[in-house]
Length: 397
Ligand code: FEO
Image (cartoon, rainbow, N blue to C red):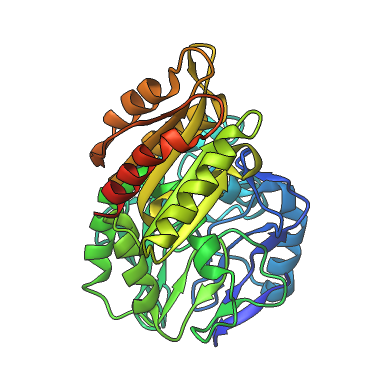
């Protein structure tokens, strides 16, 4: 999108990317993604982050339309990941007096990404609580290591009470013409896409996110300006409370996710039978996901959203069918924990899926792995029903 006003002197200068297929080369983004950047016009001019170099031309156009014949004084770099730093070197070369303001760790990283650029005398390393006065506006820097890289910092603008939150509170999806999420459901995709973004990008880092939230709790915040997705206004506490829940690994529903990986359909039929059984027993929400046919990042987010999980998979090469292996590996990477889990395996001659799934689950934290592990031989049969009932009762207990 083009530049737009957030407050009288603070502008959005980010860009949409709707050409990209996979964000970070792994996450499908059918609605694109935005690389957010902001401009604070004051006695001194500060640019808040740059954008992915894929869209540098659009970003430069936004800046030049706003700046006219003025030049920026500071480039605040909150995060060194390339989706936000594509034009740092170009900006330093274009504006000889521009100072790059960043955490010490980020300053160290600059040559890793921009070895051909001389940053000597061009950087200001800031630490927790440091401030930078621009005139009417004052920036206060708050370190946020591992949200989502170690060099990350966030920035609180004290006058207008705006938190520039780096990747935190970001979401997938380009902005189009909707820059502001105003708390009145004007961006209906926000919760699902923000959750998918959170658990897949920051999921492993719940403790660092909690540390950041404790800092934010000391501030009066009017607006959240993340590095992806809409600017959040109206009721910032709504989004902060969601982040608190997510980063404590708390489920949003008592319901059950049944994630299954089937080769010829026997396990799919069994998973659907279990779903019917659970609904008959009064389960409030039962969600089925076929892992071969579902975006992995959505499956991960759904696993975190539910309090309970049943994994059902075929045996394969004396292990477990790879889509399930990938799913459990992703859950382990993202810090999956504090859930109740049941297991169904299928094996036509030597079932191995149950053992492998259990071993993978046992590496995760605070999981209540219920019994029995249900073993299906090729297809579900009436003789399997008692075990299915027992597992259903155990997962609902
Ligand atoms: Fe949007 Fe961690 O970069």
